[in-house]
Each structure stands twice: as C-alpha cells, then as structure tokens.
Image (cartoon, rainbow, N blue to C red):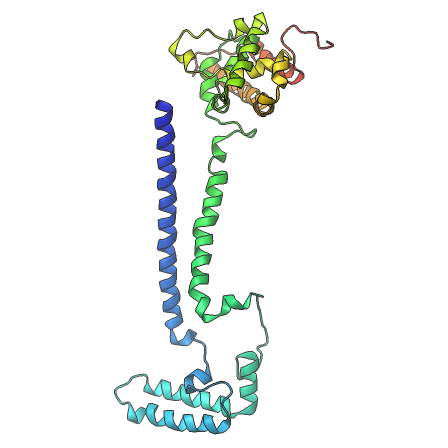
Length: 330
C-alpha cells in the first residue's frame, strides 16, 4: 500500500512538473511573439518594398508606375493631409519608391539584391528551406521552434539526465548508501552480503513475473543446504516485505546452479550479473565513509579492514561464480 502511494505521488509530481514546463514554455512563447510583432511594427526595421508602397505588381511597366505615382502623390501629399504627423514621411517614401522603380539600374538591383544600391560589401546567409521564409508560415514556424526549444529539448534533458545527480559513477542509486550504511557493521560476514545488496532499490524492483519463475526460485532455495542458512527466515515484518528473488539469483550465480541458466530467468540474471559488481563498489565506498566518520567521532560504527577485505573477496567470487571456500580450479 505504501509503495503504491509513493508511486502515485511520484507520478503526480511528474505530471505537475510537465504541466508547469508546458505553461512556462507557452508563456515565454507568447511574450516572444508580442516582442516579435512589436519589433516588426517599428518603422526603421520594416523592409522597404517599393512595389508595396506604390501598390503595384512587380511586373508593372513604366507607364503603370507613373500613373500610380501621380494618383498616390495627390492622396498622400502633406498639403492634403495636414492632420497626419506622418504625412511628410509617407510622401518621402512614395517618392523614393517611384525613383527606384523608374531608374533601370536601381530597379534591377532591387529585384536581384533587395537593395537599390546593389549588393553590400559583406553578405551572410543561412541556407533554409523556402517554406520557412514564406510570410504565411512565419507564425507556425515560430510556434514550432518554441515548442522544440522550450518543451521538447528541456523535456528530453529532464527525462534523461534529471536523476544523474542521484546516481554514482557506476550508475547505482545513491539512496542505496543509506540502506547499506544501516545494514553494515563490523561483524558483517561474507554470507551476509547477498542479502545486503539484494535490499538495494534496483534489486528490490526485480520481481518474480510468473509461477514458473517462483518454481525455479524454490528449486534454487532447496538446491543447497548453505542457502537455507544465508536467506533470512520470514520472521520479522521487515523481512516479509523484502523480495528475495535477487538474493536467490545472486546465490544461483555464486553456487553455479543450473536453475540460474534457465531461459525463464535469463533477463533477470543478466541484470544481476551486470549490477552486482557496481553494487559492491558502492558498498566499499560506504565502508570507507563510515570509517572516516568514525575516526572523526561522527559515527558509532567502526569499519575494520577485514570488512573491506570481505567485500572485495565477495566481488571477486561473484564474478568468478564461486562461494567462499570453493576451489577456483573446479
């Protein structure tokens, strides 16, 4: 029940975090679009298009240009618009547009380079698909860019690297330090280590998935008298809550039991073989830290050298598939 509550709480926090990031991304996208529209409305930053100013098509001939200029010059002349503070400026723009389109060189330069004076001395361009630059696509492209930059990219980073500070260099959850630190003592023996590392967060997530797996685990337990002494009796409430599958798989590896090679357990065994050396590395770190704290008077637990040596021997035996006292040549 407690585990289900924690799982639901974690999912709720994750959903709230995702909603928050989407909200923040939408907010900043909206602010950016307002700034974009404001900047585009600034007169000095708008592009100068003589065809748009004269309200003619790009293929208009000289006669059409002159006719349109005469009509607009009468409408936009400052004397006809005394109440318009921009009348002079608009009339200057109209005249400039007319001069550009009636000058053959200036008109050619504008059509080729977008500038009546010809190409600048220094040009920088980025090759982009044409549809990205079309006016009708500006808003959708802008929205898509901000979704990618403010939602997708941060989301990818969060889901892939958010817990990087919670793991050791070997990829083991640092929360296991608390578990190992509580279980370790100066009397920790070789036979105690399978159950100790089986209590890790990662290994407790390795559960029996079928009745066939449960039968194999029972056979592992009954296959060797030593195993019955290693696995704790289901007496205390704390022990009853522990999943024993990872401990049985560790012992199947070290006693070289044929049940450990069964295809039904193949995936779980591969995971146990991969992670157990990393777990033992973290156990060794905890032992060193406890000893340092004890030497400073900050921990009552004393970790003699024999405990560290026991852990190192256990790691070697696990990799070789041996139990304590086994002949390595057999």
